[in-house]
Image 1 (cartoon, rainbow, N blue to C red):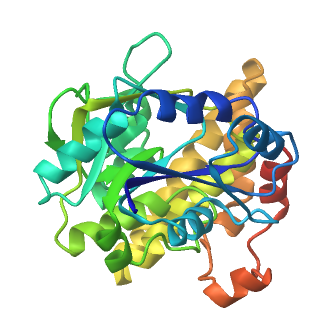
Image 2: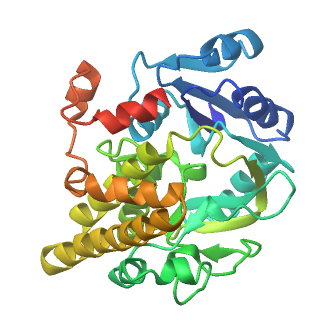
Length: 335
């Protein structure tokens, strides 16, 4: 019998988080039938051994190499036999029957298509990264001139943050992040899943842009709650930033054309360059690690501004991804 929802988790060196994550999914289940599928991206710690020992009934896929997040989720989704797919980060824990709540919400309100929840910190306060506004030339211009940094969480000067909204009301949003994203399997297949050119970061924004174009309306269900221990599985800061900005550049190249595309790339570079310059000045006065990070990112602009090249599915399956694993991405994998 097929499940109501397939919970898809991609792991990479997630030994310290994965047990709590899986256990919370299982313990918090009420009436919704679950299929838990984990794809491991070639972890070098005891992630796989932990899953096999503690959760023998979970469906575990061993990638054999680091596919990245987008391709990892796509591969896990191919093994799903459920009406809904729920993307879940290994550094999260479900609370208050969150999986049941969001599946029920989606069944009652099928017009939205994509669904997110309310992520919380360990102390119960809001962790706001469950959703964002879609990037625009306006939001990138505000980033370029430092206004998003000067006025964080301001609805006008930092629109992608969605202002001071506490994710406590039902609201349509631009982007639902992949840490907790529910989508019907039919909708997932209609959209073609994630674009696998995105090794990490940007794939959820790309999916959201395509979803909006297809008539879906991503929405937040505030009663679907989980804890999100942000940063526990992160890379070294510069490797993470390189991937983040390569993802941003890829989005600009994929979805904007002509003058808008050129201006978008210029604004990204300007924002990084301005922060690098300020950071260098601060370093002269007193050491500031963030300043060095922006300067290093600025020096690597020729690399990340190119974005990710499209990767054919056949190339990924053969293990011959062209040009994705750069030195800084290797730093991510080793960090």
